[in-house]
Image 1 (spheres, rainbow, N blue to C red):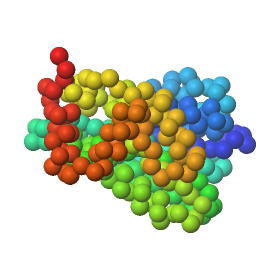
Image 2: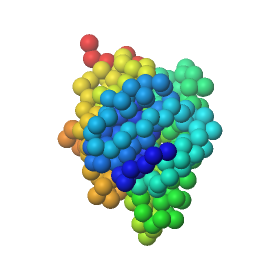
Image 3: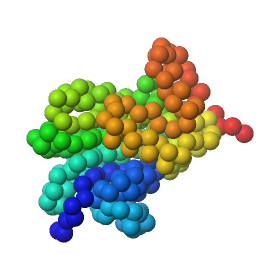
Image 4: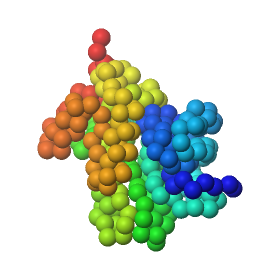
Length: 265
């Protein structure tokens, strides 16, 4: 495989939303960027970002499959140069009452949001620590900071990512590897439709711009910051406030946002 002298970055969940905009940030700042998603649209997404500076390379891999991380590791190794930055961003959700939602869908959330995150981070962090250089960005959510009724599995998965990211940051603090966790508020992406949340308050209200959130996350990553609250002032304020709410109050607030039928008329 032909390689350039540009640094190499990886973005998962890169076909749309925050992941697509993160890839745009890396490419615009001179990174050759591996863009990963499970659908064929990752190819057109990469084509649309050609000519920004770095070279985009699309990879169609289902990271929710246990073999996905290994397939990705092999593909990254084929570039013949070290991975300087990794945005582990891919995630899915499902809304609705836990006793009614589909178990297979929820286990897939865990497979992608939790298991794949850990599996990819394992080989990425080991390689970066061995070289004493690298940056890792995890995409969590402000939902990570409070219980999330009617998004119970998704919310718990993002709490895992937040805790894992901060723990890993501490473990790697003397290795030359920086770990940043991005916590976006509600953002204009395909997530809410795919998760069946359009009839909820959070699904129907105005949302933050994915490009703004990605820029905030990229900037925090490059500065070596530990946490980035992404989105508008309103979303970032909500993120700060949710950190001090007792669990019962946080759950009540989350219920108002995500309960089916809570959308504005």
